[in-house]
Amino acid sequence: MVSQLFKQGSGRIYFSCLIICVLYFIFSTSTTSISRISTYEPISTIGQQRTPSFNTDRGTSSHQTLPGVANELLALPSIQGLNELRMDMADVYITAIMDPKDISFNRLTCSSPSEERYMGLRGPTVIIDTPDTILPRYFFALNLFNCSYVLPRLLGSIIETMEFLGPGNCVLSIVGGRSDDGTTEILTKLRNKVVEMGSQYYFTTSDIDPLKEGHDRVVELAKLRNLALDPLMLAPEAQSPDSTVIFLNDVAICANDILELVYQRVLQDAHMVCALDWINEGSSFYDVWVSRGMTGDLFFEIPQSGSWEFARNLFWNDPASRAAFEAKIPFQVYACWNGAVAFTAKPLLLRQVAFRSSREKECYMGEPTLFCKDLWAYGYGRIAVIPSVNIGYNDEQSRFVKDAHGYVSDIIQTTEVEQKRPALITWRAAPPKLIKCEPDFNNPTWVPEKAE
Image (cartoon, rainbow, N blue to C red; front, side, top):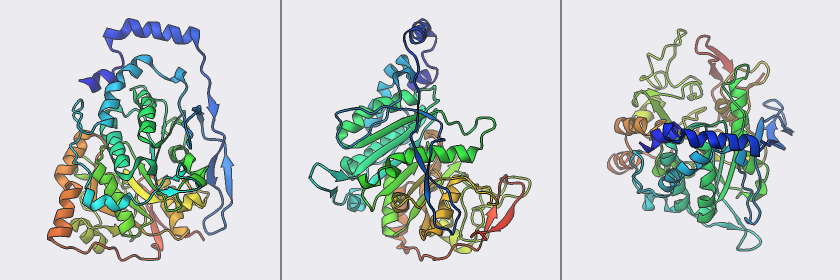
């Protein structure tokens, strides 16, 4: 009920108040927008020495810094971009986000983080110069647009994870903008709570629209992802050298899902690990356009008709990966994203890679696929799927997903405790020689992994 009221704005009950607010904003304020100063993007070709450049073409963002907050730059949208009524209604969301036991929303049921399994992830806080100067080890990044319906579960799990890992060890960076369902207002109000718990919080709004007519979706998505990474890329000295980036889509996810990704990255000595995201009540793997197995092929076959009729037949031509997938144990892939990832921050801190679109004569691929391609080029090819982490794109879908594929704790109990299956991946050092190129699902070709 609360969510529906929020989605509809003020509703008829508040119509007259809304008119007054609109008139007030029109006559008493003016909107000021400030362009991003710079965002890192590598520009040279694979296989050559890259020279970083700073590109100001990142759309318009609105932000300001708040004085008096040590060791952080908190970016906020200007008040002209906020709706007062939605600001008032954001409180119930903030309460739910900060309290795992809150029942104001019918969100995905999640258990508390496993102390025994994940305690080692807390580790010592990196302190430099003085005890008051610390270097965080975990960097959470998100791009969020019109997704207030999933924020109680998504942000609630992130906050719970940050509390578990140690607030001083965590940075939360979110890029929003263009939302009219309360997402911007919720993210704005979240600031004080995150700062109070002892974490750094960056929030910026942007007018970048990947679906705008005439825009290349991959180009715009790469810009948005790089904006979310700006605090890391522009001040690498402020982050621990062994940091992990946790990049999440607008998914309904549990704290144990997030922690398992981080845990497996450490356990496997992986450079990047991914969840599995599902649609159609958990029956269809979703991120097929981005992901590639170690055969270089898609996770499931898509014929030239573009049909998803084989969506349930994952890894049909890769027996080793299929066996690991069915056993729910980690396995290596060439590329993945799948709604939730954890990867080493090292190549970003060294300014070796960033999100980008395809270059001239390069296969048209999604920005996460190209990100993985660049990781391989720089020697970061230990990329894996973690089949115990299964997620959907709202609370209802994630319930179906958990029913179909299981919760992390249940899968671990079965695979590691009862079946005692081997936990560690045997890594391959070289990528596939050929990669399936699927610009639109209707014209597949095979292209060399490395540029000629």
